[in-house]
Length: 254
Image (tube, rainbow, N blue to C red; front, side, top):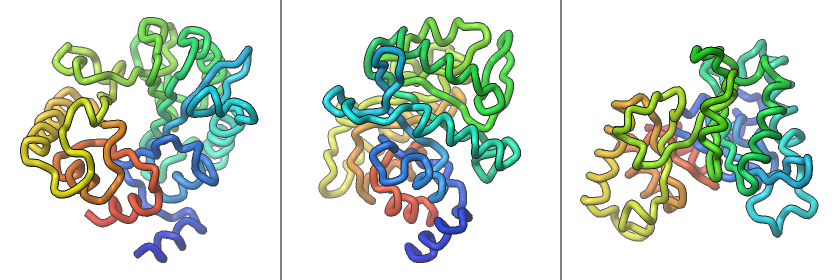
């Protein structure tokens, strides 16, 4: 199966994997393209503002020599959208771009927002509360300035929620994702079988998120097949991974 999937990478024919999430995508050999060629439909990038630049890195120690958000993601996505007639994901649904803000929330978001606004044909936006569809849907995570994002007109992105946001009546277009830390939610740490109480809690949270039209995700989850299986069986909507090829094979075989 892996050889078939790798062949699909060459010709760009991998199926869309709607439970997939490429965690810290920029750390892979070919940021954006490795994930897209494997069928990933959600991609995460950590960003810092340094002066007037938006740089992609996981920590401040990695900023020296870091590439820009525009170079790694925005410009390639704009080019792909043009080449593919305004559609990036093969199934026509928006590609999720999770932008994790790491510093200076207001300043960093203002720089990101300006770049999104320059590419109106690429990104979903909201005008007077109505969504204008685009091939990429931006969700802002990390140090997200929620008020500045959600009260903007037009609104250029949504916000990544947390578990306490469930049951608060927040619109799914505003907070389409509910993300939280695995270690703060479950006892299992990646070895042996997943305990039944963790499975039950996972099912409950996934059901609650689904009822509100939101997608559930956990960061820091053990990155192995036992974890992926438990999440898939529980109905977790986005399974994050650093192991793009292995997880793609897993998700392609329900």
